Image (cartoon, rainbow, N blue to C red; front, side):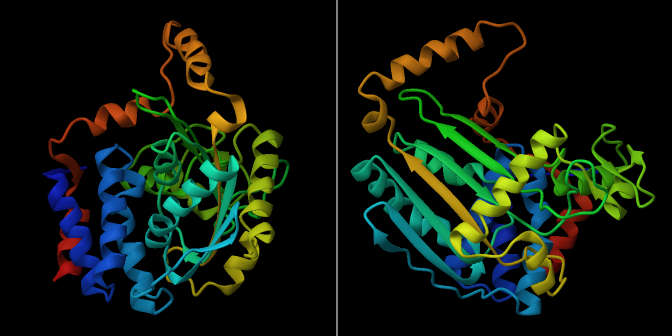
Length: 332
């Protein structure tokens, strides 16, 4: 695989130009392009420029409203709701997080439900934004069927990621963001593109047999991580990001999608908690005792530390050369 070094500023601009060329207005293009740039900056290539063709497909097909103007509303003191107006999710999220944070600081705990949006990004953006307010964050979102329940061989669940952030005053937050599938679909697609094998147990081929060939898994089905444990968490996400917020389950999402290859319409659930109100003024010092124990163990790093280390490096990123050429064509 050949790569081309490209600056973070140029990554943003390339994404922005592709999106505006496809019909997104400045606010929507800026929100998505910034999300994509942050993913590349933090080493999550499966959620970076790799996603732009999918974003573009939804704009070209008319499935996504590139001029969406989502406005969050305060439903109760502890509940914020945002109708995404069928746009891409980053704009709805960025406009709603501040209201959610203030609600949590007032009530101790608050929730945000986002509906009628198209989520195609990593989830750490949302929860890290809450951690910057010294709040604990949790988020989950469903997708289209790609994962078989434990013991099955037919896709029913989405990859259904969850993300969690714990604030650390005067330090970078603890953050994890993971699919409840054994591997995110984007990572499987990149492995197939680049000719890499994946760990056995990632998924089944079209014949229902275990395989380490990502191309075969894309024809078959992913498996949940940890067998029935991951399957149960995936089911929880289906309910929390679907019926609980008034949105579709993954199999319903697929039935309503136009199969343009981009993100489908769905919901997202985000929770914000004030550890100050919930646990008292010593919450941060108390948590640091756990982190100190973990960091003293050989071979252990705290979740999110790799991303934050990469974030401190503003040098150009190596991006698949064919992808860059494809995006330059789309931008023109």
